Length: 220
Image (cartoon, rainbow, N blue to C red; front, side, top):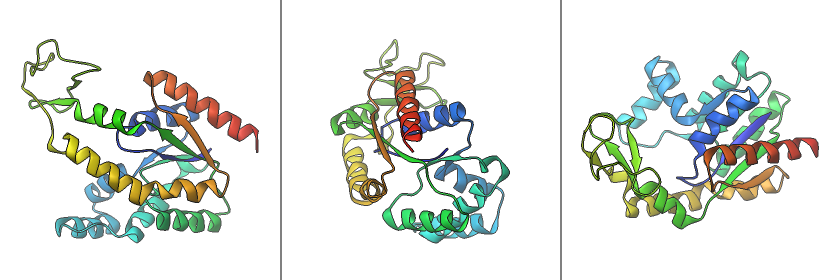
């Protein structure tokens, strides 16, 4: 299957993308991973992207699209892929359609992870990270440390990242509503959108998504 995964910050896209890609046996293609891989390997696209980033500018859509094109042409993506973080706006979605058309393939579904805005704020603003090791992550409500402000694993100080503050989260949500959410209507016009709730345990959300995608696939 060829799937685009969309949803607001805090919807659990990264977690679900990894799990779904594994279950569907297709590569998980994340915008962040594309940038990191191209920059670390010093590809021409990576050098170009880094020049924009070093100057404090956004990487142009055409560079992102070129990276995605190169990744989707790799052998492991021949039978499908799961795109996470791309397309990020309608112009990228249109470019993706054109790209797929030239390859004689098309998307099977656009999976929209739905979550109430206040839940997003609660999920992200409640995160606490260990200063000693950023892989040690806690949450004041869902997975609190045994001792407030202290990492259970190494005893390091737990802190809230600046981009996890409530004000920053609401700003990120506004950017999502303005720039990314319109692609849902764009894909709805093509009959591709499958919307599921991302509330509940991670495993339940994954199963919900798989069942919804199967119904979508069976209905075609």
